[in-house]
Every structure is written in C-alpha cells, then in structure tokens.
Image (cartoon, rainbow, N blue to C red):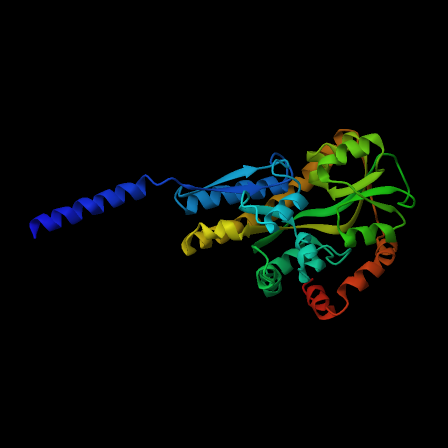
Length: 325
C-alpha cells in the first residue's frame, strides 16, 4: 500500500509539473488600423492586458495591427472559408450583414444615433445582446462578444468643396454606404482600405469617410486636408471570436475572453471621448481645414430613402433604438 501511495504521489507530481510547463495558448487578434493613437488600438491593448491577467498567463494575445492579416473583408472571407489563423477580430459592426446578419444593419444606417450617449445606451441594453447573438443563431462560425465605437464618421476631401455632388467617394463594399453616398449626389467607389491613401493621392477618388481618429492615424490629411464633420453614421465596432478560437479554450477560458471583451469596451468608451478631441486639435494645428455641419436636416432628407429601405419589416427595432435616447 505504501509503495502504491508513493507511485500515485509521483504521478501526481509529474502531472502537476507537466501542467505547469504547458505552453500558453496564443490567440491572434486582427486589427486593420494602427494601434498607436487609435481608439481601436486602445481596445486591442485593453483586451490583451485583461485576458492575459484573467488567465494568469495561460492565454496570450498576439495583436496583428495595421492590416497585417488583411483588410476586414479579407479576414472575414477567410474565416468563413475555414481559415483558422485569426482568433479575435475587431470589425465594423455592420460587417456581418453580408453574411446574413439583419439586426446589425441599424448600426450603420445614417443618422440613427443622435449622440454617442444614445449609442452607449444601446450597447448597455438587452437589445444589444440580441444583436450580438444573431451571428451564432444564424449558424455563422463566429461569436459576437461586445460592441463599441470609434466616434462619428465624417467625409474628407482632396479639395475644398461645398457639397458632395459629382464627387468620387471611396466607400467600403457595403450597399448601405453606397446608397447613402449616392443619395448625397456622389459616385460611390469601392476601394480597399489599404489602397485608400494612394487612391486619394492619385485622384482615383476625390474623398472618403472615416472616424476622425482613423483619419489622423492613417495620415489621410496629407492627401485630403479638408474634413467635413457631418457625422453621417457612428463608427460602431464589434469584437468577435471565431469558432476555431473557442474550440481550443475551456468554458472557463471562453468566459475570460468575454470578460476581457466587455472590459475593452469600457476602455473604448473612455478613449473615444479623449482621442477625438485630441485628434481634431492635432489636425487643426497641422493645417487641416475642419468644417462643422451645423444643420444636418438636408443630409438626413437626402439619405432617408436608404434608411427606410433597410428598416422595412423591422420598424419595431428602429423604434426601440430611438426610445433609448
């Protein structure tokens, strides 16, 4: 019996040592923008810090920023095709629309949110939880973790203009953005994010749109120094985890990922308030012309058709969002 006990004790020690020496799990986090100076960069760093802390180092996060893993469309296409090289992705909140998500359409429609406080009321509501759950409910290979934002999106131009009529404006490959820009009298032109700087520089497009922090961090003011603050949509973002990511984690570790995502979005809320003001001042100090749109009524009227078309059959959800003001 004594000998048996000794054997069991030795085995237990071996197993304990093996567990202690086990390699940590590394999760790859994809981000199209730079980490430095951006709200989404702060989100990535906050997620990494919190998850590594919660897991006691059992899970590490490798942030691949500045589009190293490809632009948003490429990363998502690869995931849906079965690629497992990315585990966590920061996407635009409307990006899953093209794969069958319906509810998230409200997060990209023009002039839905009247303020950032209005949006954060949504983020903290049960309605947001329903939106996040939609991807998994529809059988997509991803799990929605949390929502955040980068600030309102604005147009920026190579040359000073009074309106958008006749301009070639870069948009993402999204029918809502295309419809919105067309409603404003411009020609929507699809260009990948990684090619936007050179497309502005060479005249392939006359203008584009981004949250102000991304405008600055990608140095777009160097080739398009006129910023028109119309705030047509809010730069809503979402963190998602791939099925292949969760497959290599225990339920306890999956819960840590969720907690880290929730924490990252509290950091997002604080970061966006500070960084927008800092970015605008930096742009002005650098000679960028910043123009405020005082009356957005004409803009709202011009984009009303794309709004009504996309909320058809879901008017009740639209009313629920408006009620959160």
